[in-house]
Length: 383
Ligand SMILES: Cc1cc2nc3c(=O)[nH]c(=O)nc-3n(C[C@H](O)[C@H](O)[C@H](O)COP(=O)(O)O)c2cc1C
Image (cartoon, rainbow, N blue to C red; front, top):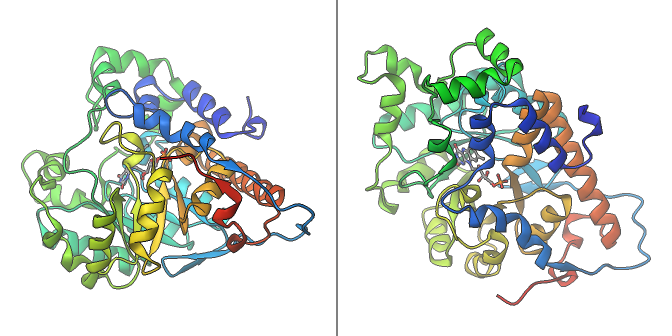
């Protein structure tokens, strides 16, 4: 199947499955524990039903909006994902960022990216945000933020739903860890996908590229050991207060599920509250994000933007999150399936599919601008 024959995100998912070694595909596709949150994230959108305004002129549809002070042509953008070169060894993050620029959407890069913020900035002049975890060494975080700012990143996202890693059972079943270590199961899966292996062999080693200079200082356990030791279970709100001040405007807190935390995020100066459960990779049976939006909207009361993600595989899912009160919608796996299916062209295909679906949904609903996607058009299930 060729990329342009993929007519929806699920087609790209199937193509990615055929191209990637099983363990890599499962690392993208899987979730925590019984994967209840993961599967409900997608199906829950079906419980929100739509009405439309008939006989409206929908010849011109404007999807432009502003998310966290960033003007953008689309209300959706690419969410941060770690070690993206695993899914496409040659280009990884660069492919994502270039496709985002071409589609006029924001690209958010993970702390654990496999390309440096400087290289990503060289590859694209499109709008870029950087994501952080709360690490124990504040000076290293500051240094990273300074580099990202210098490279032209205009938004900073602090992810707070990962005090410990979620229990993703597909990984041990595949004998897979990041970084992958050689073993028979991994080897047999890799050999079954020679295209991916060939790409891997020809590409530089996959590392948390932004921190390899720390390895060069002779840190015990190398850069991976360093990164693992930086995650602390003891982090609280008071440990993150300095970040907004240090970064300045354009600061989001990602991984919020409760009204009181949304309020705290605003108290420490967040410009956006990001409702997310890490794509079902952390706490299983957590509430689908669309169901959380009404109470978050009420808590935020317009004082900050609201970003939402989770299970977005259709343009109508984007429209539903916007109608439920989100200012912007982030795409995780939808973009990654595209990347696995066909590198930069695959990400572009994913973004085009979602853009076309979103535009069609707007037209069918009689909405010509984002502000016309009002909550009145949607019937929410009883929660
Ligand atoms: C393979 C993978 C890696 C991820 N890595 C990160 C990360 O490094 N930082 C982060 O904040 N979120 C990370 N996420 C979560 C996404 O940013 C996003 O919240 C989630 O994927 C949204 O759900 P969806 O994939 O169903 O769209 C990751 C998600 C996936 C699938």
